[in-house]
Length: 341
Image 1: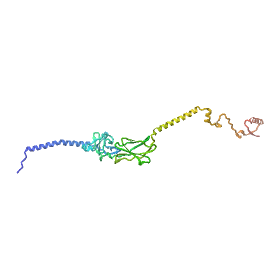
Image 2: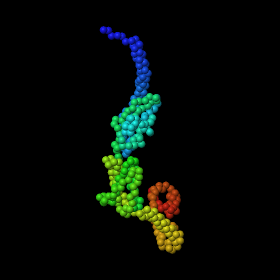
Image 3: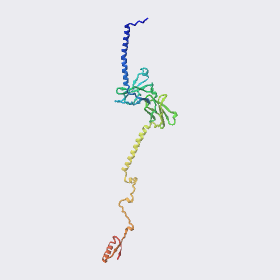
């Protein structure tokens, strides 16, 4: 028994339905091809590498390695984050970091964006002109409870009978624990706590002249605390110290001015005999006194100086004349002469 052929109209309808189905798939196939081409063009730029985050005192900084790629313009970077709310309520959406969009440097401050104690996913991508790279995600989620707390920067000063303890660069959500004790009585120390926004702790009614020591540490949670500062000891000067120093300086200046005035007045109005009594003048040495005849005694050898002269006598008249000449000049220059005939 042979199977009858289907009617010709039914077979034609089947062919038409297949053609229509195929035609409806063509736009989808073409769109997929276009998307694949776009993806090939978009991901031509390499993605950033070595993405890491550093958190110190609740300041969170994301950083990455500069992109080593040729670009006619500056390479720009953008950062996004995804918290617990975005992951669970908003179906895994990502949020642009406010201060980290199209930036030229390779680090980004996310302190204001990561505002809760939940886990955050972070990723970054590069852009060169119209070309975009793929996103590079942080290796594991970040939680701000993993921040590192450093020893607080503390400054201790005294104002009268009180201590002023000031701090710098504290985490905004932290609490500062301050321990104050009198030197030698650490077991009786007093503990003060204050929020980080306060920045200055005032401890009043302390003992005048005593030495007080201060130590502090930062606390975020019971299990998250910083190390303690070294003890800082100062001497409390008392409530009168505020005016003692200016008063002492003023009195010293007044006394010095009075002494100088008294000395000047005494010199100007001093009588001659009184001045000679109080201001005795030492006499000058004899050699420095004026109108003094200085006698210089000459040695015996310098009083008379003799010289021996040898003369040859040839003519008696000449000898007689020469002898008379010597006798006349004997008073001026004594000479001793030997005549050789």
